[in-house]
Length: 424
Image (cartoon, rainbow, N blue to C red; front, side):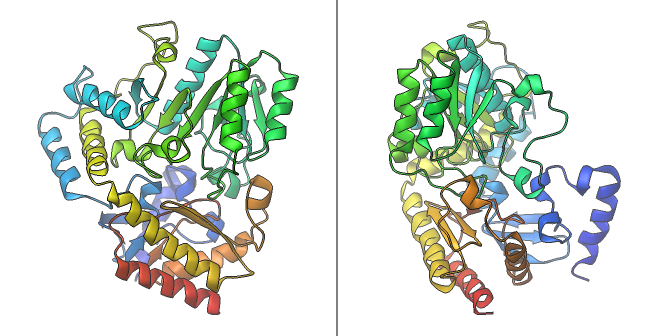
């Protein structure tokens, strides 16, 4: 009975949707199961159509830092919806969002709202090229920056588990200006700069890689990227779609005290609604139309419902900064427990409320060490967790997200289920 309704929906879905899903990361192929179809969520719990209530550590892949359906956020969304869903015209909330983003992330002097992280990154790259009048960019193997053509090269996220690191349908001409370096490897970056003198517009990086599993930057790596881009007249772009407002209220750039030239945001900035943003130094962002020659537009950008959700979420985080201490404490409890019970079998990376369990005994510090993980063993682990009411990513190479709604009791239960798996 428990699997019937999800199975039925999946059979219907695969007839009219690729893989039966609207994003590959939702597919359960890597863990050889049928996806759970979700009916509702509240706090740290998510309930599928079969009636299974689970403790949720996906949190909609990051936005749910406060937990699902936070009362204050829902109230603001309802209030905004009563006034109309979309106008295609400026609103006060758009102004308030731009001001609040600048208050929380001071490097984003001027910003623009879009509707997804992919759109934010694609636009930031275009601005960097327009500003520098250069074509080439550097990205890192295993870092995922959305599915725009020029960046879908040696990507992470679902591209790893589906064995499609590069996408069909992307012409070689679209990616010829995308240079690929190794995350945490300064020499690989320096070599690309040496071989492409005065041609590199920007370096784009996830300051904490979170799409090949969570991989932390080595000491000095981000500082090196800041220095080498300045030396070469290139821009540094922080892709903070995941880390923005999650590692701290000022994102990874506040956490590590690094000032990028441009930043991209998603996930939390929309409070659960589809929102992205990109921004940076005023002189760079003034290149964007209608101020400058770099064109970018979006009919639903700055949507009044989405900005209502995002504004309230960010205000709650700003006014309750002790949330970040609570998140760190809870996530570290889980990480320390797994390190102990899985010693010699797994490697655990954790920072703030982000963590990953890699099924390899070796430290994971880059793409090569991440892909050594035993994905079949992860599938067993995933199945054990799901069958015991713990909802985690159906992929070895995705992050585990902890929210402020997770209670100590639920953390205890999660640890208990994890320890049970490793005792087997």
